[in-house]
Image (cartoon, rainbow, N blue to C red; front, side, top):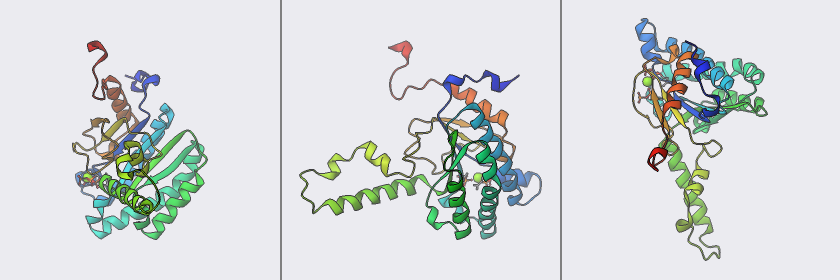
Length: 252
Ligand code: IPE
Ligand code: IPE
Ligand code: MG
């Protein structure tokens, strides 16, 4: 059965977000160290990026390292950070060939210097690409972003306090103003979230942005997640009825 051919090209999600989970368990099943799973996870990143770009999905966001992942053993954190540098350096050529722009969200200043540098270079070297935006969430958490947005809004408001303005900046703050203060301001809201490995939770991913996102959970561990698995998620999404709090057209 050709899954790709069944996908309706006029009903694609414009932004797919992915929680890439299960690398450690994939490795454990093979009696190998967790890092072995992370290394194999890179293949799945490549497959999903390619599949999304080929379909014509304009935004793909991958959760690569959460604010909470610093709690892991130092050796694992270091291995993940080195893998990041290595992968970005290796993949820039392919990203350019496929016209894919790299972006990152999260508290990037706190990444190790080498990782930060590789990331900034990757972003700079792919900045003119147009087909798809691939965003890596690194040292990212939804609560961190909401908090940093609130802090920036407060800072601005206190700077304006002494200015001669008749308006109350707090009263005037809109959802759109708040959205503009988030690090995801340049991305449309995700329409589909995929989480692999059978876990059914959000784990502090795009909290503000996922208010109306369709959720898809796959039992497959991330290193085994293939283009076919990605197509299954898209097909499932295309069966959903999105109401955004309104009524189904059959009821109205
Ligand atoms: C996801 O796989 C990768 C990262 C969080 C960086 P895990 O490392 O969480 O793998 P499991 O969930 O322990 O199997
Ligand atoms: C979420 O996976 C974070 C990433 C995939 C980067 P985790 O494995 O860290 O999440 P929990 O601990 O199972 O909630
Ligand atoms: Mg996990």
